[in-house]
Structures are given as C-alpha cells and as structure tokens.
Length: 396
Image 1 (cartoon, rainbow, N blue to C red):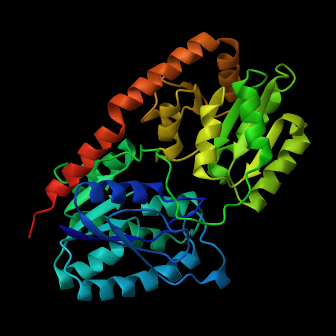
Image 2 (image 1 turned 60 degrees about the vertical axis):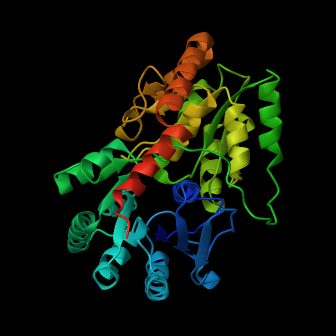
Image 3 (image 1 turned 30 degrees about the horizontal axis):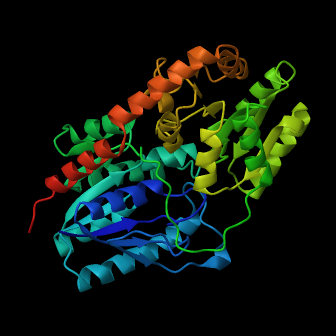
C-alpha cells in the first residue's frame, strides 16, 4: 500500500529530534509500505530507504523551530497543508499517517480524497498548550479539545505512545478497537546523510573515558533542558551530594545556548561547577555513548504524563536509572527496574546516594530493566505492533 506521512516537525534535527517519526516510517518501509513523508524544511537529511522525504519552505529568517507550540509552527503548518493537497491530487494514497497536529490537516482533507487515516498521537495537544503556557485563553483550549475529539473519531487507526495517552484516547473513543499502544522505544542511532558535524565537546569523551576506567563515577542526563525536565532539581540535588562524593561528576547533555547559560549560572551559584558540566546540543550517538558509560542515568522531570523517549534508551543501556516518581515515569518504570523517588531535591539526592552506596543492588535493578526492555519494548515487539497498524488499514 502507499501512504502519505504528514509530520509537521523539523525532520531531522539534532535537538528536539522527532525520533518517533523516523522509527515509525522506517519500520513501515521495512514491512513493504511505500511512503512519502511531508515535513518542515528545517533539519538534516537522513538515510531512510523506501521513504521519499518532501520538505516545505525553511524560512531561516524566523529562526529555528522550538520544542512545543509556536507561531512559527502555525505558519509552517499552512504550507504543509497546501503541499498535502498538491500531493493528494498528484498521487493515489491508501492512507494518510498523521503525526501530532498533522491530524487536523488529514481530517479536513479526508472527505475530499477518501483515504484512511492513521493518527500517530504523541501527546494531547490541549495539554501541550498548558504545559508550554502557549495560551491562557479558555476558548482556544476548548476549541482544541473539540478538534482533538473530532480527529480521534475521524481516524481509522489511532497510535498512542504511552499508557496515559491510551486512557485519554479510550475515554474519548469509548472503545479500544482501533487503538494501538506503540511506545517510542527504539534507540538505534539514526543515520544522517553527510553533513558538517559540529565538534564534539571534549569534556564528554574525557569524562566517559575516565568513568570507563573507574577513575570517576559519572551521572548523566541527556535530553532537552526545558523547565519541566527538572534540571534545577537535578543541580540542587547534586549540590547536596557534592562534598560527600569527590569522585562523582555530573554531565548534562542537551539544551540551546540560552538554556545552558541559565543552568551554568545556577550551577555556579550552588558552587558545583568544578564537577558539573553542561555541553549543549550533542549528536544522538554521543548521547548514547555517554549514557552507556555512566554510573547513573537520570530523569528528574517534574511534570507531564507522556513517557520521555530517553527512558527506553536508559532501560536498554543497562545502567541504573534514578527518576522522579511521577506519572510520566511510573506508567513504564517500577521499583524493580529503577530507583523512583519523590520530585524533591532531598529525595532525588537520596536516590542517587542509594546507587552510589549500594552498587550491587543498583546493578541488579539495571539488569532487571534491560530484561524488561527486551521483553516489552525491543525491535521485534515494536515491529509486531507496527504490523498490527498496517493490518488495520483495509487494502484498496
């Protein structure tokens, strides 16, 4: 079958990267689907056999697309909308696979082109508006809630990426018949086509080598530095341990220049800069390498319901995980496979201390996590679920 993937995201970038779009499209192509992928103009090209990538205008003058809702995204979505019409006129698609707000484009055009819709629901868009404080206007949020309900009911298949979203969609649909949970659990390195790579921060390789040789112990955070990720909590909890463990370093990978400057200043005010290192944006490959060489990997997120992609790669890495005991984590993690603690500085520090002081117990928990990942989230499990999605779409 032939499908049009509408992915209104900066595909493919090194920050805020839509890994889920890449892995889903790659899996469907591996299963024999013929795909056109329509996306924003921003981003690097990737090696994605079986998928034709079609880009909108880049609009560099307006800067880079940021994580979360933005006026720039709304502008780019207008161009995606008209490009989608052009592609639908020129091609006969059996289905449209819509990611995030791409569902609204797919739902509007469905009556005119009579295709099936696969809705890849990565989040509740009204909840996103609240999380990012994009608007506090009540009628805008209410309108988006109505649009979300209509989009779910218009879709022929709905993919959700975590249990909380599954419940959210089930409550709206009043059924699980067309609902499939596919976690964003793959963590294979994405193969970028040749680009001019930015230099790696030397401190990252230096610290991982020292950790590998047993000369230091290393705590690694890899991800965005948005406020909800709890980086301030992480820094403050590290300051509580700083004097007691002089061989422990904290490495924070990710974030733009403004975010790195903000948290560097916070680290300076806490007096921990000598062993706290913020690198800014790094490649996916380096982030995986650093996490694999860590003593502890952390997810100090303080709010949210969607499970972070990094949780799956952390489980697959076989390194002890310390995470906050909030829904975004507990719908996937349990006390058998991670150190779960309250979202407070003292509790998070105590979770890290537990790993440092009882390494054998922590290593057993890490082995449990690796086994859990293999049983529930590995590539064979992922591919089986993607095949289910394809089977749901009737053939022409």
